[in-house]
Length: 78
Image (cartoon, rainbow, N blue to C red; front, side, top):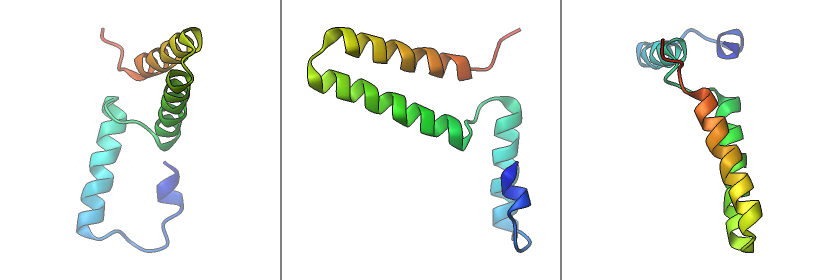
C-alpha cells in the first residue's frame, strides 16, 4: 500500500485502527481502492450524462459498462 511509504510520522492509535481496518477490507475483498473508486465515479458520470442527453443507446452502453466494472470488483465465490 502506497500510504505506508508516504508516512512522515508514526500513526496514532485511532489512525492505526483505521489503517488496519482498511487493510483488512482490501485483503478480504470488501473494500475498493482509490483507483477503483475513481473509475466508479467516472463511469457513473458517463451514465448520468447519457441519461441527460436522452440517448437511450448511449445510456444503456454506459450503464452496462458501469455494471460490468462493479461486478468485476466483487469477490469471487468458491
